[in-house]
Image 1: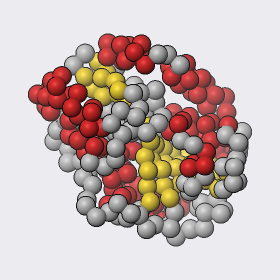
Image 2 (image 1 turned 90 degrees about the vertical axis):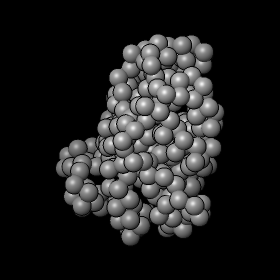
Image 3 (image 1 turned 180 degrees about the horizontal axis):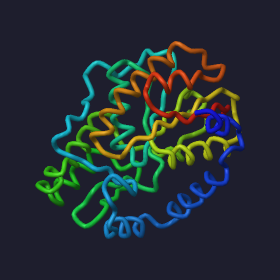
Length: 262
């Protein structure tokens, strides 16, 4: 980590790239939903990139277990990916099954899934059950064959609808202790968003990036690593900076990290 970690810890570090990422995202979000949908459905997005997860029917997604609706963890966690349907949802389910206080979000412009002619897009807030119904009506065989229906049905069994990070009220953000992002670009968007907000309670919040390929196979593996990391976090005092160097070593990966206040 070294100098890279120190740069991330400085409040102003990386603001140029974060601002550019935020501006690009904002421009997309200002388009009318109908225009975004038409563009998304016709674009040749590459699964595993471009905010579109690479799915596989052979991957055993972690399923939510009954009787784990109320967390009892010491801290509250938020998982963030692009569409709130693959990486953040997998981590959400893994932590929920282990009785953590957890929520999940996407910070892309729309929920993007692999489709027969490019990305199949839905607006954030569209109930997962409606997404499942739409996909089944459009092409049950296609979406089943590539594993997208499994992904959407698991999401519907976990929470009502995909949530967009940028719509999260600051008061609710202030109740979150740890934010884990699954891609450097998304980490920069979240950090930029948090730093631009006016603090309300000046509560400490810790933002972590665990870069993960947007595939269902990688998401399942990363879910296990996230659980291990969060168990470590439960043992530390979050009024101070985390010992992320030792945590990164234990999880065999590089962790980007920033502590700030909201």
